Image 1 (cartoon, rainbow, N blue to C red):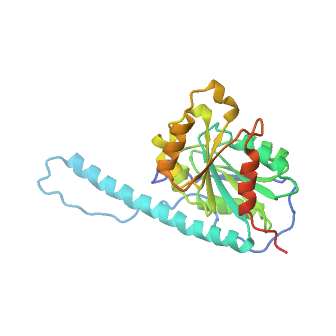
Image 2: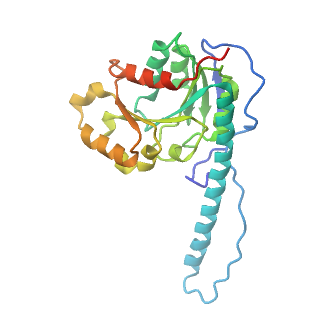
Image 3: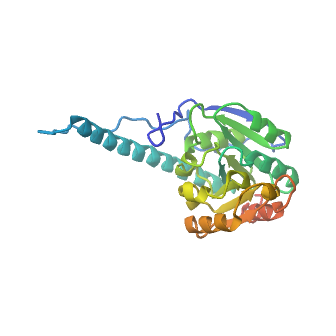
Length: 284
């Protein structure tokens, strides 16, 4: 069980769905990633004496809390080390990796489908698709022309750096390309795990309400870009854009905010411009 959130991440399944990719191998790969999951070591044992303790259950709980904190620190420290290896590998290749996060149903896959179609021939895009089960989203992405890797996390509620390394190895992205990591739909645990990405994008749909930056501040705190999606539905939902923007600004003062609709295309050009400004030039 993952010490940070209680999920199980040890049984990730990875499947490659080739699209219109570059199709040539590279010899250099992230050096880690033999099997996915977290470091589940038990941590140091503690022999505490509680002489005269009035509540032995409270003492037992204190030991359990200390053990949980140590395990969480160990898991996140290992993940951060692997993330830095991913980041350096991407830097050396000249590949931009974007970690795309949101709650379930916010429109990540729809956004990527339209992005892939409209940037075809301009930017080479590959996708790491994270879901607990199934390959529906990977099939949708593949049909739009992208190479895509499906990572099923089982009971796990987030991707981690080791899973990302496995996905990068399977995709083998060329220099000057873009890799979008569509994380598992969840506003909690994905925010904790660095994957080695160069940018974090949070998709916030108007249909889920305007209170998410207040209820899930950590997700927004580290965002480089907040996309307010499904704006074509604004006339039909209760969404206070000014309140949402102010709450995002309090959580992440430096985050850029854009509004768009992947259905109508409104605002999509600003999203494309943001991506193209950050995607490295193709390597010779």
